[in-house]
Amino acid sequence: MDERDWIQQAKQGDRKALQQLLSAQYPILSGYVMKMAGKRDLAQDIVQDTLLKAIENLDRYRHEAKFSTWLIQIATNRMKDEWRKQQNSFPTEELEERIPDHGKEPEEEVMRKLEIQEAMEILQILPLEKRSVFILKHYYGYKYEEIAGMLSCPIGTVRSRLHYCVKKIMEEVERRGSNDTKRRAGKASH
Image 1: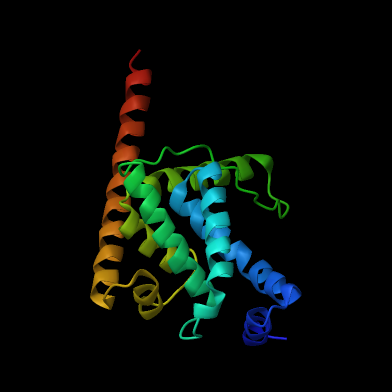
Image 2: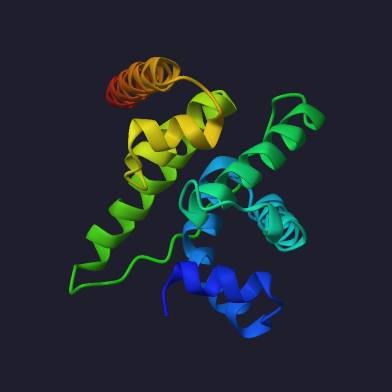
């Protein structure tokens, strides 16, 4: 059975089909929201709210885009509401990414986790509407047209937001690299 079948059956009240549909989309939804929120508790609340809203409004889903696209639209709108409440300030908590070992040395795994942590910290600096474009494009591989549909904005806006993100991320990485170099130089002179 494919997504369309699950949706059709779920609209007719089949709870098992609804569960299958939502279970299939849960990983992409929760990953996206966690990257956007940067705070586990907030992300879990938004994911739950998103799923509840999707269930309540399933009859409004029209197959114009993928179901995951529709869920991300709902989550993004919920995140915007939360963003306004928090006055554009989300605290970032340590992210415990589950990274498979794949036979790497423990030091390599620690360094990789630190790199992921740093990337998530940098993403949290970006404004919400720009961060969402970057995450959707680079973490999930959505096309510009899909992102424009999810975020209800023109493709040109998607492109400019993505350009902004890349520029700001590069500036922040460079700034952090400069600060690390200065710190190391200061320690060496003592």
